[in-house]
Amino acid sequence: MSSRSITDIYQHNERAVIGAGAFAAFLVLWEGFSRGWWAMLFEPLLGESARALAIKPIFISSPTGVAQQAWTMFAVTGEIWPHIAQSGAQLIVGLGAAILIGVPLGLAAGRYRTFSYILDPFLSALNATPQVAFLPLFVMWIGTGFWMRVLIIFLLAVIPITMNALAAVRTVDPRLLKVASSFGASELHTFRTVIAPSALPFILSGMRLAVGRSMIGIIVAELYGSATGIGIMINMAGDSDKVFVGVLVIVIAGLLMSEALRAIERRYDGWRPVIGDNT
Amino acid sequence: MHGDGLQRYTPQLVGAAAVFAFVAFWEAAAAYKLADPIFISSPSRIASVAAEMWEDPDFWRDIKVSATEFIWGYLAAIAVGIPLGLAVGWYKQLQYALGPFIDVLNAVPRVTFMPILVLWFGIGIWSKFAVVFLGAVIPIILSTYSGVRTNEARFLRVAKSFSASQMKTFTSIILPGTAPYIFTGLKYASGRALLGVVVGELYAATAGVGHMIAQAGNAFETDRVFFGVLLFTFTGLVVTTILAHMEKRFDRWRPEGAVR
Image (cartoon, rainbow over all chains, first blue to last red; front, top):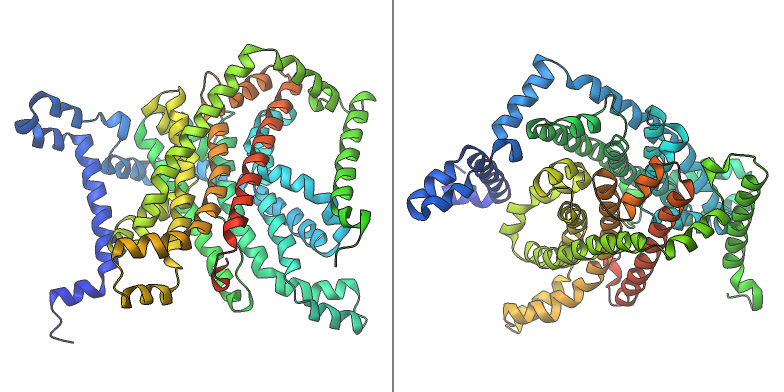
């Protein structure tokens, strides 16, 4: 072990080294465009046309600019917190409602065939529509406030949740259902003891998809209106540093939430056959 | 198992009846003023607005703009996404280098970048092209990549034992094995592309079906809004149906164990 050479160390950590290197290179490249490093570097070679390599920071911001802006907004002025709180509240209410309605709906459609025949055309049509197209309609119905945004998040999230809950019931081992009915288990009892446990992992993957969709909802719903929210902050930012800070918040929130759900899913992974993972 | 006669079509019949009931209820609700038609419109109003718009050159211009954004953005995503996905799947080091970027882009809805894209490319067709491209390219890269990675190791070993060239291995094993995954990616990507068109046009645009919906919304023309939404639904259904058929065709090759 003591005689591990540099190449050995590299071989063992190739993924991390290359990944970190590529990321660092990206940041340097970005900073360089913004500060005109590349223009300076290539000026002797390219002459005047090298100027094109210096891009105004107002267009592309820069890693240091974003970091500085983030520091200011989080720690100095604290102006970002109300935006995060507002968007977070919308997300929780919208996603919560989608779970409360989507899971029972999907379970029922999975269990009762006729009901699934009724639900299916509507579900497929809604699924094929980019649901954000309903936005102007929602604005007409309930204005541009909190509830409109909750409604669009709900609509985006409820579809994957319902579809996965439906698929989940279909994967329950029919032998188990037969046993339950032979022993005269009530419908409720069957749901609680047979269907729910084996459906849970699928329902969780549906929720993970739904989290991604609801991030779309946050951004798009806040295109309208002019109160607080991360999407509003991005839209009204006016300078690219702020825009990137907002994007960064969304990135981190999205990664954290999908990782958390993935961790919960992993707990149940042993039980379940893998089905579609539509990113 | 198939019942004979009508029974076989029970799902379709029940589904059609449900849709019919929904449309009839909607029409009745508007006709008997259960809710103000200004808010809920009605199927017959939407139909008449559709007939009216059919004659309107502005409407066809909107369709043309949206179709251009969708088709070119989607095609560019295919042209970039498939080769990139294949390369990332084939060369380990490339995957290490690009993996972090792809993962991050996958974690955020690409429509978040809309304000930046508008800043860079303006409110014309190019910012929509960019958001459609960004939306569609990620699922294509990811599923092409996972297609390459799930190729059966046995086949690769056989190819190696027979000292097949890299090129030969690639064209005769990797590509056919990856095709079904690529179609799965294309299906998801089409939804993302359509989303990009809508968001881009709602955000800032001068033309397009999304722009038409936004304007009709501002003017409280509910019928037009519904008609626009239905156009998107229709487009989405047509595109996903076509791609789902293609996916199913290629699915037959897919080795059992790899079915996701």
